[in-house]
Amino acid sequence: MAEVVLQGVSKSYAGRPTVHAVDLAIADKEFMVLVGPSGCGKSTTLRMIAGLEDITSGRLLIDGREVTHAEPQKRDIAMVFQSYALYPHMTAYRNMAFGLLKTSRLSKEEIDQRIREAAEILHITHLLDRKPNALSGGERQRVAIGRALVRQPKVFLFDEPLSNLDAKLRTHMRGELKRLHKELGLTVIYVTHDQIEAMTLGTRVAILSQGRLQQVGAPMDLYMRPANTFVATFIGSPEMSLLRCALKPNGEGSLVHHAAFDTRVPERLEASEILLGVRPEEVIVGAADAPAMARGVVERTELIGSEALAEIRLGEDRIVARTPVMSAPPAGAEVGLNFDMARVRLFDAATGSAMPRL
Ligand SMILES: Nc1ncnc2c1ncn2[C@@H]1O[C@H](COP(=O)(O)OP(=O)(O)O)[C@@H](O)[C@H]1O
Ligand SMILES: [Mg+2]
Image (cartoon, rainbow, N blue to C red):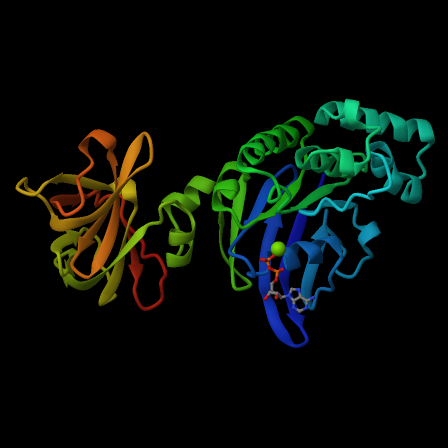
């Protein structure tokens, strides 16, 4: 069992609040990804869980036991860093053995067996005699993961472990991490600034902005039902367009007015101004003379292989639409637009919070 619970965990550096009362429960065998822009407090949060950084206030529990102020080695956690932090003068084997020799009571034979098993799983058996400078970036990363695996900790912490790898290797290692998690039933807390990495790896994803937790949920949940405009625009690429509209209650629903269109939604909403959140795949682009909800002018079109992205001016706003390459409208063209109104999201313009939809 390995369950990690953060209760109102906060961090201040020299009196300056950096992480604000984070409440988060990571279940046994879960792959929890902590994602957010650079500087939002991801590493600080992870280091507090590892015990490498003091917790200013709040509580941390592992398997129901309070470890808020426990020494790092008393927490039964292993951390893998972006920099790998391998000892350059030791072979891969020694790097993996070193921590166990120092801190465990395992015999040499038991340690050897653990290293051989981990090496097998990570496909690095043939590299065990090499020193880090004779290993590629991806191989070093495997050794660093191996060093964590041999300790058989309750919880694995990863801080941007793939950031130093090229794009192809990163995608490959992502698959490997997913496999390890599944095969070995690991409990993982994984930090990244990359929303695609978060969406592909996480069983759940926690989104952080300026030290505050914005939303926690399954990847598709965050994509389909973002709690606020931060989450809405952080997850998804190209990002969701936000169109500022005036709102007026009308019968059981509401009238939505934008400079380029008028429409209605079935919900009766209280806000006077909203942001209509539309993802590129929720815009249907048609001919200028076909019946449409709105009319706009194409500013530019980008071909991205299987499909095209068209940036379209709509009054004062811009909206991005995904279209098949064959029907991509050229720059300068006037087009008719229909939105998939059942799927678009509505945000209170004053607070940025999502409004409930029927
Ligand atoms: N040891 C420290 N002393 C003072 N400020 C720090 C320290 N470590 C991090 N910070 C600040 O805390 C904020 C969050 O940092 P960090 O957790 O590293 O962000 P992230 O990992 O999300 O990029 C940043 O503004 C950073 O400058
Ligand atoms: Mg960081």
